[in-house]
Image (cartoon, rainbow, N blue to C red; front, side):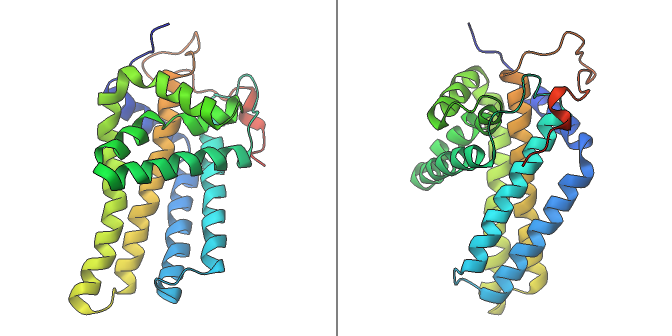
Length: 233
């Protein structure tokens, strides 16, 4: 069966609709993540500590919860949730490492991997059939929509790049990055992560899940399904 397609505007609309479903959790995530990482940067600088490791793990779990809540609210657990945090984390780590390597190599490969693997973390929560299976299904499902997904991947990557610029420029000019710049940089970084979560759920819903019979172009079909009352734990 040929993969479904979605253009840039359709994906953008889906992202905005998902954002309107859970504006409070998304905002809280951005503020909490930005505050935690700003505290780490301002207190420990470039020194990697066990405390930063704990912050990274906590951030990973919050991203998992945010992804789960968005999927549940959008009614994507009709067949029940199968994968948990460990499956989500494993897919995130494997895909993230390969995306970073692709970005460091020539930038473009990293953007392509980011776009093509965006629904994989959602797929593993529904199916839980392994990392390679989730990445493979995601790759196949996004094959016909790569050009539409790439600009969204660029938006996320620009956010990640802006974090470094907002921290490095004041440091080079003033000798130290003011706390305000550090916090703004981490807000941008957290917003980029939230955008990535929205993109993952949007592409999974558009390209990997059959639309409900009563869905329409005005956003119908968002009523929570059987999985909406589940706990992400």
